[in-house]
Length: 93
Image (cartoon, rainbow, N blue to C red; front, side):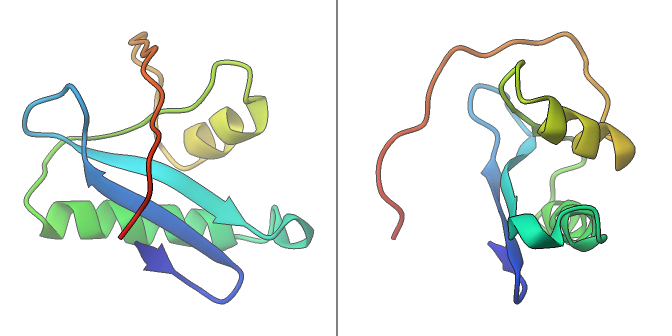
C-alpha cells in the first residue's frame, strides 16, 4: 500500500497476468478530488511496482466508473481493450 494523509493506493501482482503488477485501488477523500493527490498516489504506486521488479502494470476498474477511468487516463494509463469479470473478495492482513 502507498498511503498519504488523505489518500492511499493498493498494489500487488496482477491476477491472471504473468509478470505484471497491478494498481488495485486508489482512494482519495472526496473533498480532495482533483487536487493532485490521486495523481501523486498513482505515480508513487507505479514507482513502487517498478521497484518490485514489474516492468508491466495494469489498473482495473469498472467500465461504468468513468471518474476512475478519466483519472487513470489523465495519468498516462491507457485502455488496452482487455476485460475482467472476476471480483476480488476477502480480507487484508
